[in-house]
Image 1 (cartoon, one colour):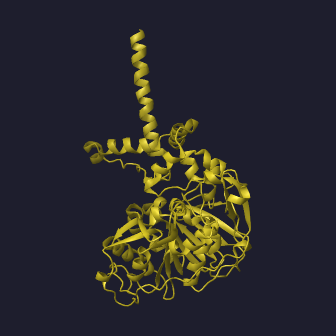
Image 2 (image 1 turned 45 degrees about the vertical axis):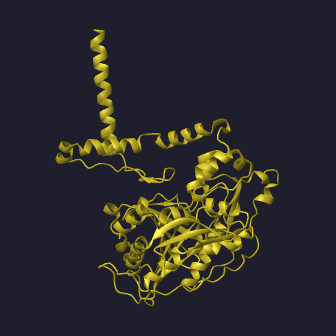
Image 3 (image 1 turned 30 degrees about the horizontal axis):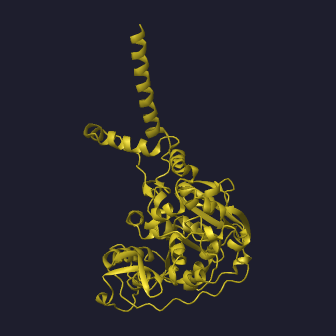
Length: 463
């Protein structure tokens, strides 16, 4: 009798597990498709068909999907990171070695006994004027995709005059350390993709792109004996091989001078730039479309202190905890409505700033975070018959704090993150751009994404 009961319990347990698997695959929403903390795409729900069942592909896909989406997975990952840091067993020097791929993180321990105001300055004065973009060599656009409308091109360029590999550099005195290296072939393909998106715009429309270096690179630069700045060959090359209505701006060059002057353009405890650093770069982007931004201090903002972001989340380092950041949360100058779309005709209205966001995620608390299919932010003080001036942002978490800036020059901003967009559900992005009457496109994202093949492949697939 006891053996029969154990057998029944075992069978019941197996059936329960099977039902949980069926529920996860068939009945629950898809969930997140990209893991920020792991920087990778998560497994997608497998399609159920007779051929997939027979070949074993469905079983393999189901196993991978459940491994990436089981309940409490994100919390378990966070706990494992906390366990590795319990009791501060990992020293600051350990973290500096671990983060070598991103660049050595500056040791702020020497500042620990200073006052918060001294180590977390908040810019209150008019920002120093951003220097004009260094003139770039003109060049011909690489061959456009078949779907692209021909555009005026820049002057022809001799590709042999450019290095076969192009670099992003950190400069220590006369020494250059390459932080990122891209081949001409990789960048030509990226330029071709930018050209295709630019072809969707009206005759006077522009596509403007910038790539934000990680804060760890800025910290590494500050740790040098003779820091001279960040500079990049990559953006000038992309600028040269794209049509005339495409501009590629180097955020590294723009941020170097204010960074070395001690302006608060990067966080210590978070991988992102500060909203003020983003402001300096977006001001330059606006010049490319003939617009200008008001002073940084003109934007309504709430200031949060202490702020401990994603670097602290992943390290739990005590020196960061003793030297927290100050976070400015900016809101637009005009009233807006934020719609997060889950399907072309299905959306929810969300607040511009999510007050319930976790402390370590406060930098990305705008618009409900970067995880939506598509987010449309529209001014609500326009006349009923007005045709809103519209731009599209191709972005990641770096771009979220910049939406308030774009809303100074545009009535409607479409926020698109390739990592969370589902073309099968939403349709092609080119249809969305044309349907909304987008006038300009801005690509504003961090180096991890805009130079990453996964992100670019998604951008290509969604076209």
